[in-house]
Image (cartoon, rainbow, N blue to C red; front, side, top):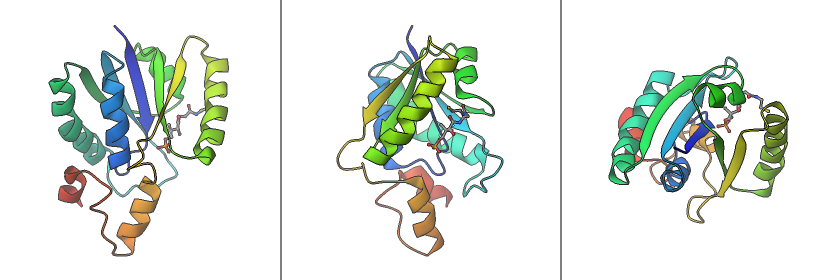
Length: 158
Ligand code: PNS
């Protein structure tokens, strides 16, 4: 059974994340979405809200394609979380060259720490490749409309 771990902050989950999760479900038997807890950031959505939104949005989609989905939160090293949860793949979405610079460095560090775990990059689909949670939080804070960028569960919770 191929288990993938898709980590992120998901504050909030965006249409870009939905794209990556859907496509990941086609390449793994089980996908674990891991929400990293950051002690320094003050989130827009609580951890519980983020977990519930991902579960409600993506659970039925995973079921429809016969894949298993679980949503967890974690503190500490990503490679430890992968190993503890039996994941052999870490999945990350790539939007821009700037993403690649950062992700490539993180991947090499992770591989140095845990050679048995591969990181797989999925290039963002063209129609959602510009979306970022950070910019969505900014737009929302300034009274802008975020509805084109997020799934319905986010709008229902905001
Ligand atoms: O949504 P983000 O901000 O891209 O998610 C970042 C996340 C949670 C994937 C990253 O911060 C992470 O991997 N945190 C775990 C800590 C860790 O393992 N750090 C060393 C990486 S080399």
